[in-house]
Image: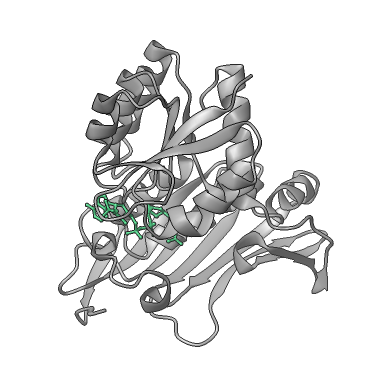
Length: 308
Ligand code: NAP
């Protein structure tokens, strides 16, 4: 089969850092176009917008939407209706309810819609899931603390409605959590801190539970200077399992466990090639639903304004 001809839409940080190298390393797919208002790549067809790309007649089979979540639904709808397969960066949209019509559009057009959760492809995740299928979890603590000024400099969209604020990284923890636990979890309480000049939170604490009474506590912070922390600790009847560095490392009672090398985005593209070949979609909204529920249940506080 000839390779999937892909266009990247929104050539920003994640497209450059991860999508370009992963695409170059993945058989069965190739980058043929970029749609981005302010950025282009040598040797690759360039258009300012997805609408211009689709109108041009440039031969593409798929698009990877690497724009901010706000406005992504319209782009996905446009691409699916034009007969293209679609990769959605995380989070899959700005709301939960906008995804059902996209899933329906993918079904109607016979195209693949893949809502990616890159952290689920981190090396520790599948081994942790296998361990927790056998060991009874007793409590979970998520600590997700990073410096927004280091990781998201100048990204105003994060602070706008639909930008998720601290949940932009925090949803990665929830994507891992919902993959490794044996039972679904739901939100039981949340405290969100909003900077006085922002529409999305800069810090959050979250309590969740499952139907068996498992308690999950999450502490998310966007103002962490010094060491950065992306950890999930699961106490079980067989010891404490810790996924650290966003799922890059795994330990049991402090002993490091052997893992395969990191290949999050290469695995995303390999999975996409397989989904297209099999004529399937992959859209799991559980992490986004938890964030939406946190907003529903939250107590809110207003804190100092945030300036980059
Ligand atoms: P980014 O650096 O701001 O890049 C997004 C690109 O989208 C921009 O460069 C811009 O390119 C285009 N764009 C189109 N409409 C836009 C708008 N209204 N506002 C701003 N940019 C717009 O963002 P990113 O960090 O790559 O994140 C993009 C998505 O990937 C987000 O959903 C994020 O959660 C996800 N993600 C990010 C990371 C990370 O480490 N940064 C990791 C994993 C996933 P033009 O101006 O050229 O059109």
